[in-house]
Length: 212
Image 1 (spheres, rainbow, N blue to C red):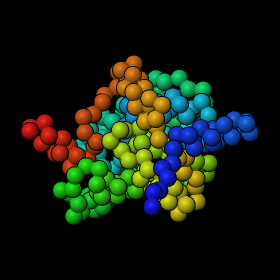
Image 2 (cartoon, rainbow, N blue to C red; image 1 turned 90 degrees about the vertical axis):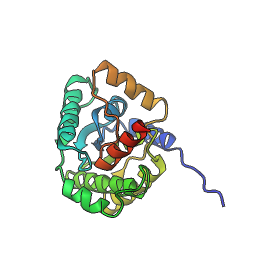
Image 3 (cartoon, one colour; image 1 turned 180 degrees about the vertical axis):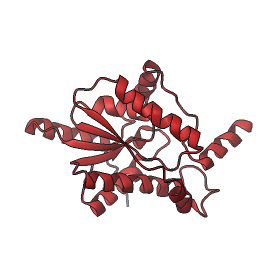
Image 4 (cartoon, rainbow, N blue to C red; image 1 turned 60 degrees about the vertical axis):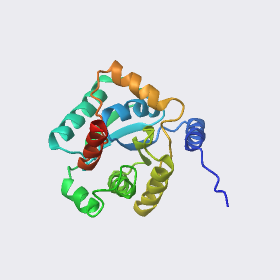
C-alpha cells in the first residue's frame, strides 16, 4: 500500500494564505538549532508571524561550541530586519538529559534512532515552552537541512504538540530553495557555519569521514 507523501511546504502556504485573509498575526515559537539554519526561516516567517526564537540544544558538544552557536543566534536576531517583532528565549543547557537519552545509542549512525530521539527531546521542550507561553504555534528550523527528515520532524512535532495542547506549524524549510537562501544569508551576515550537526557522536562521525 502506497502512503501519499505530504507536501509540507504547500500545507504551510495554505495556512499562511488563510491567516492573511483573516488579517491575523499569530505568535510563533521557533525552535532553532543554529543561526545559519534559522536565517531563512526567520526571513520567511517573520512576514506573517510574531516570532520568539527558542534556543534549546542540549545535544551540542563541547560547551564552547554551544556558547559560540548561541551568541551567533543572538547576533543574527539583532542584525536582521524583520516586518514583525522577533525576540529570543534561551533554553537550559541540559546536556545530562541528552546523554541519558542517548544511552545505548552512542554508536548509531547520524540520522538514525538516536537523532529521532534527539529531535523529540528538543521539540517536546519547545512544545512545553510554547504551551506555557500561550503561543499560537511552534515549529523548528531543523527541516531546512537536506540531511534532516522533514516527514519525521513533522510527525514528532505534531504528536508532541497534541500532548502539550499547542499547534505545530508543519513545514519543510528546505523547499523553495530555503537551504540555498540560508547559505546566502549566512555569507551576508558573516555567520559561523559548523561542519557537524552538534553532538559529540556526530562530531566523531564527521571526523572519521574526513580521515578516510
